[in-house]
Amino acid sequence: MLALRASTNKSNNFVNYRRLVIARRPGTTWLNKAGAMVGLCRLCQKEADLQFGHIFPRFAVKWLKKTSATGFLRTTGSSEREQDSEREYLMCAACEQILSKDEKVFSEQIFIPYHERGETVFEYGPWLGRFLAGLHFKVINCRSLDSGPKNVTEIIDATKMELRNFLLGQSDKSGRAEFHLFFGDVVQDANYEVPSKFNWYMSRSLDASLVSNLSGTVGVYAKFLKIMTFSFLTPRNTVSERWEGTQIFEKGTLKTPQEIESKGLGSFITDRVKAVARAIAELPPKENERIAKSAIGNPERALASESYRTYLADKALRQRLEERAAQARLASPAGRMKGRDRNSPCRCGSGKKFKKCHGG
Image: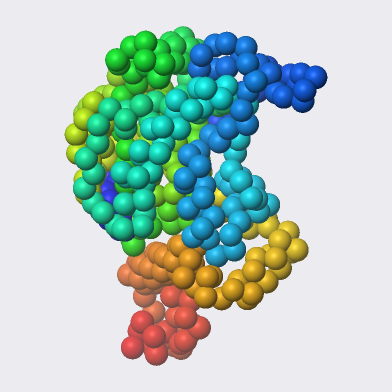
């Protein structure tokens, strides 16, 4: 079993997760004569003018743009740069306002202190549970699962109702959802092969989905930049799913380091990272030219950006993994060279003769 550990600005090792299914669920809306989008508000369940609201918190989107090398966004699975993140017609203005109050507190008490000041200890109250409930309520209303336990539909529908009652103040409990929050960042090393752009995903991406695995676990996943959140909608197996320092209660303290040992999260994250890497690799030539021009036009911003820091971290991680793989090849019986073979190119890929490289 692989483990995920993290402390401020550094995380070592990771977890291991089953493949999860992600899909979009369209809502039923229409335009009225005034040009407003009308539909059933997912929170209050009343017909109203719906707001084109952000799925991910606006403060995270603003910080992502502010700390990028170019001032633009690139969302998971997209090869185009954008001015904004994913938005949906989900709720009316009054219900958007209910959620925005706790988003503001979260930004001031946790997001900014962690991302900008590197703080490691965070006191929280009931507002944190409400913030996570609101975020996951949005995710659960704009994502769907194509597979899972036989009763997955009942689990999702019941969770929607429980979170709705909690957010509207009709219940003082969030129901079955067990919320967790994990502080991450770029990783310095890994004990298994990770895909390219791993650090970009861990510290710069916005991603969300419903999740399930073959053991019957159902949950909600949402990450924004260096913060990863998860809610178990089915009882967590505390033996195979050990999450230390991550669970959210009515009030308490979050602090790093935290630790997760699990049988599922690692492969899920790896799948998401691969999707990001494919999107970036497939950038059109014109888009690469625009990025280069933006960096050349403002080199100070580019070099001081979080984007560049993440690029360097990915490069260093890739070099470290390649060096370790080369050493493993040399240590194997097939990697040893004798006699005239010592004049052959070294198997580490340096281009030097073996006798002047690892055979010296």
